[in-house]
Amino acid sequence: MIQGFQQRFESAGGGDVAPLLLFTGGKGGVGKSTLVANLGVHLAREGLRVLLVDLDLGLANLDVMLSLHPAHTISEVLAGECELSDCVVSGPCGVELLPAGSGEAAMGRLEGAARARLLRELSELSRDYDLVIADSAAGIGPDVLAFSAAADHVFVVTTPQPSALTDAYGLYKALDSWAREAGREVPTPELVLNQVSGLEEAERLARRLSEACQRFLCRRPQLAGWLPASLAVAEGEKARRAFVEVQRNSLAVNCLRRLAGRVRRLSSAASQAIPG
Image 1 (spheres, rainbow, N blue to C red):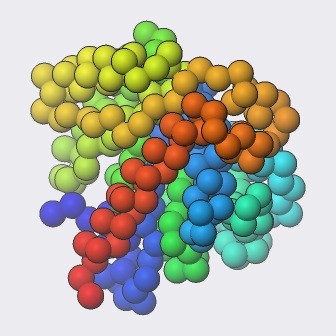
Image 2: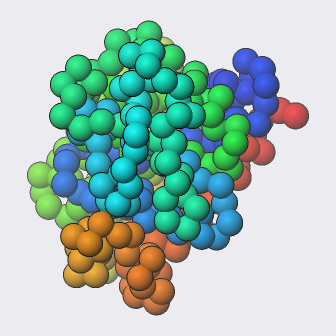
């Protein structure tokens, strides 16, 4: 039986744990942090209580992307210096962020007990929200795999570059191997294609990756959404603002809206799966 973040911690008592959706990628620089920041702002603007969590614990940057200046970070929580709720800062359109630090080598790989504690405390904090969206580190490190296995839904972000697609497949393979070795049933992450020329390219690349996963891993990732290569997105990054704040009807914003719809449906399904 698949048991994600929400089911596991609600069954432990207390109820009302928000679903955890995690965005990750096999390769750095594919735009997952930009995607997470904009998705959070958009969903908050739609009226959801959204908590963004920076789980790139050694090289966090969601605070920078949203022009926020947190007083405390997750590393201080794990050091026993403050509570998780002390770290939360408010961002654009009411989205809230649980930040991590940057340049902290010790945070690049947590001990299992620290990771379990973080997830447990995050479950308690999540009771104040409708949805938790996390941005993980790139690659196939133990934190990435463990956080992916703990989430209710996972999205793998990649770009059309051959190295990025290869690394995305490597992440699917590593997560599948981790699940088999741990004796866990882990849902197949959905795929997000970023910086593509259009729907045709997104569907073609998704089909190619899905066929490889089906052939070698007996898994078939679904395409959750895509975003175009966009100068406006790049300009938003430079200005340290979410592009959804300054645009309304661009192709990038419309694609993000469709992805947000997918996120809402998945989070709603996760909530309905909890026995009442």
